[in-house]
Image (tube, rainbow, N blue to C red; front, top):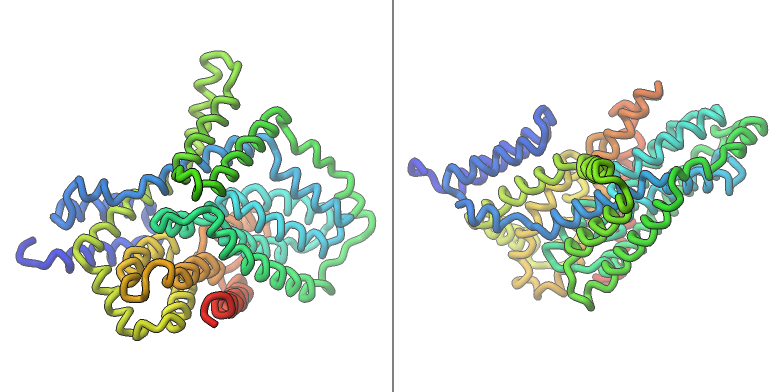
Length: 437
């Protein structure tokens, strides 16, 4: 175009797009859609190539799980579990700290992180107000738990969805390879927080009695919906686990589960009420994220078509000399650092085709798997590095500000950097012992 190599045009568009995304001055879906269409206008891609670049398996998986989660949320299940857990430890402040962290991590493995913290944080404030204690340690540990827990499964964090879809990995693949280190990191981190705050979190017997008086059953707003949601969610997870044998794509499973739950949710309603409830659920789908992914897939496709990512892959091979250990640790460390500063979704989306271009030179897909697990761990754990490292971090900070307990960028950084470094060191040791020895 105008005598300029399309590689330079594609690179310029992507760099400007990522720079604008970093500033967060414009909605991220608008930014990627504008950049994607400009790339088409400039001739980097044609329309057929652009649409072919969109991974509809990922899009379907996201939409399906959003619908399932939004309907399940209406039953009150998640708040019930949080309050039930707090009462099981007799409302002891340190016990509640551990319970809420582990509940957050567990839910984040199956829900998106933002939904998890939106459900858990209000319950946290309710409990800490009753106990008359500082909510800060609870909030930041829940932030860390949401990002760590989401790393354990295929559907827990968008980077994993991207990696799983691109490589055809199953739900079981992620659980078997990443869940062990996630559990280890969560247990160590929770223990450290309990030890650090054991002399600061105290309350009276009367305040603990106030928490014990909270009836968790009041959280369940619709028992029938609860049973329907649990049945569909269990069936969907089972289908994910068996997908490697049934060869049914995860996106298809998620959409089918969403459609079944929508049917059960609206069954027996009058025509107008049925349509209204259906539209309300569709309105709760995070369409900003969906269109952000669509634009992002087109941008990455432009980098792939022009050969930029293959060139980067070749450069990376030369940098590491094709050494597996160097590649794993470099990907792990760089992913964590970059994901703490920029959104890990565009970073991972860009890295996937680059790493795929390296597979043949490094012994094929199976030999490269430690590198892929390093990318997932680095990108997901890196979200704990700064207050803007993950959407859940920003959401919790906003909720804390509204409740009169602001979390500043610097205050968060004091805790987040050591936590991120610790989780990356543990991940590095895990990858070395399990795959590289």
